Image 1 (cartoon, rainbow, N blue to C red):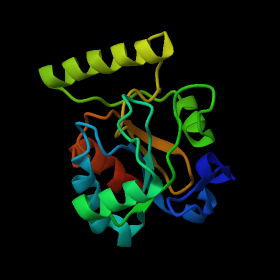
Image 2: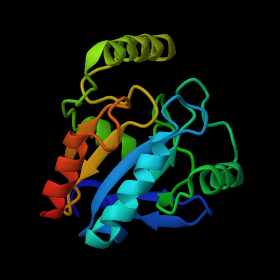
Image 3: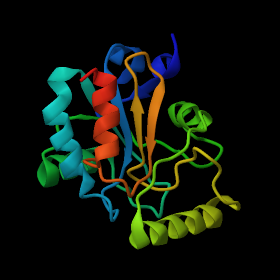
Length: 189
C-alpha cells in the first residue's frame, strides 16, 4: 500500500485502526489541541466534515501536547471537550507525539514528504510564523525544516491513493479557499 495506508493509529476509544480503512477517501489530517488559540478551528473542521463526508472526505483529528502543552487532558477529557464545545463528529485519535525521538509514524511520514507549507498572509500571519519558529527552536534546538509541523492545527490533505496533496500551516483557516480547493480537487468536484 502507498502513502499513509501502511500506518496504524489508535482511536480515542483505545482501538487500533489501520489507516487502510480510509483507502479511497480523501483525508484531512489535523493535529488538534483544546487550549490553543486555534482551537475554534474545530468549528470550521466540523462544518467541512458535514459538507463533504458524504462525498468521500474523512477528517482525522490527532490531539497533540507537543506545542506549549495545549492538550494535557485524558482521552475522556478530549472527547468530552470536543462533544460539548464543538459537537465534533469526525474521527478523533489518541494523543500523538510529533516532536522528539518518539514521534508517531504517521507524522514521520507526513513531515518526511517535505512539501512546501501554505501559510497565512498579512502581518498577523507573519507574527505567528515568527512566534512558531522561535517556539520550535526553543523546544528542538533548531529552526524548522521544510515540511515540519510547527504548531497545533497544522493540516494535511491526503488523496484517495494515500498521498499528501496539500500541506497547510496552523494559521490557515480550514475554510480558506486554498484548503477547500485542494479538498474539492481531490474529491473530483
